[in-house]
Length: 162
Image (tube, rainbow, N blue to C red; front, side, top):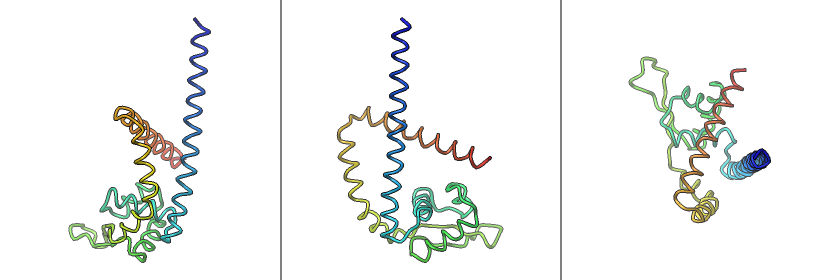
């Protein structure tokens, strides 16, 4: 019985190692894709990440964006300056804030078609890939990726606290 459980444990470790290796490969490939994309639209990696966060979670205050992006507030100021100069975002005064300096950052969306065109190849490839899986399998994959993202957030927070 222990030979079977040892074999099962070994197989599980090998499978888990393969998943981790695949995630490392994915990280590299997405970084390369983001770098190529960023070079074409003149966005640094941090700028693109912040723009994506604003598009997904905005409008946001610069402080909230800094927290989501894991960046220092002074760094966010530079990122927002570049995004605004590029026509990606606007900064608006928050009339309801007690601090008259408070601003809200919004994505302009005017340049979103440009993003969609450049990422169309990846989106098409992902659509084709997803077609190969059943709905139940896609639910498992989505759950795994959500949990992986959460593990990444937790590990990032741990490193930031050190």
